[in-house]
Length: 125
Image (tube, rainbow, N blue to C red):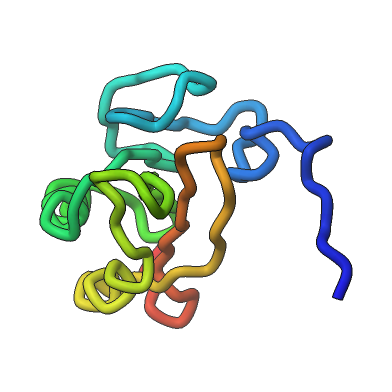
């Protein structure tokens, strides 16, 4: 199997950030992304999680205000780092908040990200 080369894509491309989108970024997510404040009309939230409990806190904080069609990217440290979180451990947690994973990408040499969305059949908006 041939390995795909995504080196030509920017991080914004990998994360699906398009011009005009409202994005909030916080935590240890690498140095390539700007930070912004939490708003209810966001399209994407990108936040780091150093534990499953931190991810649970994120889902609890954003659930009441985030639109159903908004995406949550959880950035974790890659394997081998002290704060490594297995992304597979985040999947059942997300389901308890009516979210499913639908994309994983490398952010940089030390971080990767997993995207969670509300399945279309469960969206109200």
